Length: 396
Ligand SMILES: *Cc1c(COP(=O)(O)O)cnc(C)c1O
Image 1 (spheres, rainbow, N blue to C red):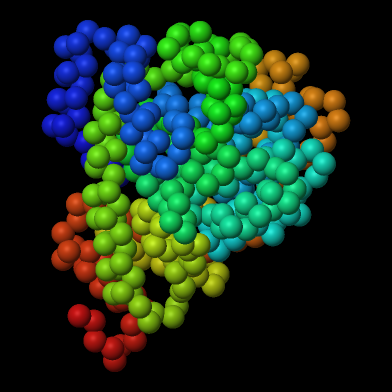
Image 2: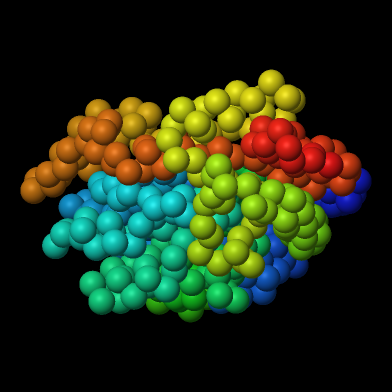
């Protein structure tokens, strides 16, 4: 999805020539600090911590909010497994909630899954589709829960004018190979809360012992891990960030064209989107009445050389394939395993989120591209129309 080229090579070259790869050598003028300031500005947040992965950002977000052993965190049944793994990493257990037709967490099911142990909700903006943040923030406020937005697939998207990732207490982004922006591996966490920020800093940086120039830490130091970034990925990401608006514009244009080309076909509906203007438009999702219709449509597309997929086949994005969760192996050591915390009672089964499975198997995805000539795109539209148009209709 991402675009990378000469500008990134130049940026990396400069870092190597400077001989300073460690982020704290550069201090406030280093690439990593600059990236964090630029990211905060772009996302409309007070604080950003760049780090080694989206998973690290989720873990530090949870740690920053004080989530730990004995806590339950509500996560959607459709997300990359890392969302659930991050809960286990801090000693909490993931509680699965259904998605709705928007392919994001169903607010009504969040309410059903709240217990006295619930501490946080992780709405996931899957494929850049915004979650119903108004409903989720309302539920969180009413029940005094934290919200960590997993915006790993939604860099640059927004919901009612606010950047995805900036609406909850914290937000997490990923820069791995499959994301809208990438430096190979990487991630970032954002927050507006000073204490959450300080705790996340310590968690991500061996207790933040290295960041000598961050003065006025008010939270007492505790032992953390090391998810620090370095100057090379940060230099790449600063260039990537400048490409973001152009990438999203190209994706949104593709999607708009396809939506208007396919208007009026009634064999399927486009999955509803919570804020269609704000979504990242990486994916066009089509919802069928039953799974066999979706399957045969997918087969038809593939036979005609159109790249398409169904989310039910997306392996570790479907909860029933999360083996360590399903089989309750939460850590390397039994005494560190969230599932062994006294009083924690949770069970999983492959069919526990039936509605999620039904939506995933009835949905077909088309991936939008940034570099596709218009005639290729209209050819895709014609292939789809060719499948559904009646004999007496004229296909352009
Ligand atoms: C990619 C992804 C992650 C994890 O990001 P990494 O950088 O690979 O650790 C978490 N959640 C979602 C929804 C993702 O797509």
